[in-house]
Length: 190
Image (cartoon, one colour):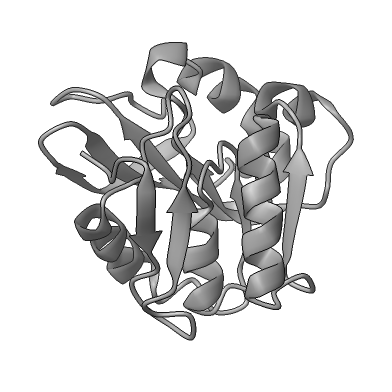
């Protein structure tokens, strides 16, 4: 299980060791250090220069870890005003305002809005009880670059599958979560 209210840390890169606040908020369950370390080891070759979309940002641990390890920019989407405020303060503390943009919005509503450009990596770790994986996955495709990567974190041993258009790359499990990384399938040539 992720950390409880308190702090989590950025594992690697230029902000390695930086602690991020974890407010007490319903459904907030930061990805464990071990799972993040594994995920970003898998992603390291594609991170330099990548555009990252962190749809249910929470503490920002996933999106900020990506920036710390070389991603070019991150859009951190969080609807809870307290969590969004904490994210904005963290971005300011890291002097990352030129790379990280915090958007106070419902992730599903944002996905129905005009695009913010195409992203190379989408991080999808919503509150487990909300069951938002399928609606988010159904709306995500126009936001992603060809060959984009997708990280899904979900409960249970089997987890949530990304579905059609995604090729499984790697997966892992912790006591409380299933962690899966997918690559967008190449489009069929006409």
